[in-house]
Amino acid sequence: MPGRKPPAIHLTDYERQSIELLVRRYSTGQQKAIRGRIILLAADGKNNKEIVRELNVSVDTARLWRQRWLDLNSFSIDDLSIEERLEDLPRPGAPPRLTANQICQIEELACEKPENSGRPITQWTSREIADEIKKRGIIDEISPRHASRLLKKKASDRT
Image (cartoon, rainbow, N blue to C red; front, side, top):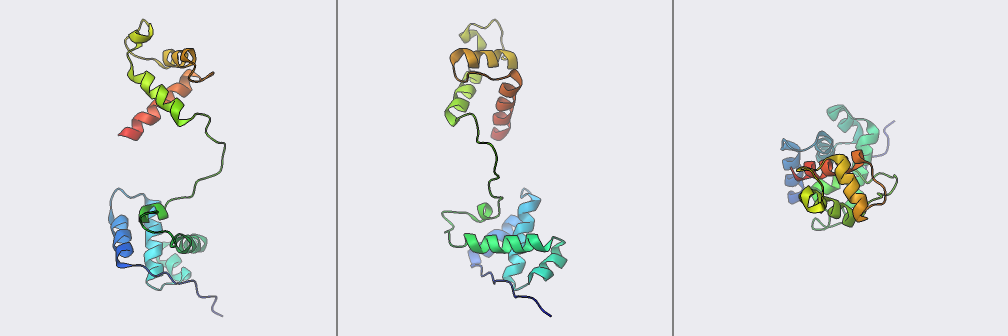
């Protein structure tokens, strides 16, 4: 006995071209590429079982991304790009302890020469920068390792 027919997805020419481009791009992560393929196959009229067989994903994955695309379809492309529609939702967890302002102050400090802060070194070490962050009152407590991780993360975001 056949099951319920899944809701149909109708793509505009722009949406289809954008998803096809995203799927073909080398720099696209595999999760986004698979999600894009799910949407393209659903728009071609394939049901979830056919998508599962063709892409070797779970039926829950096919169902989830079909429904998520339909839910986000009410937003315009200007508000939510094609790529953003295929991203994971934010995950729950503890809220960040540092504000954007504090992170900017830490980055600004890292760009300064240590000599300007009265430090007898030529390059910041994680211990020295953590001490200076506390001395300036940017953050009350921070470990040298955490200070180092913050700066490494920001450096990798820029590359």
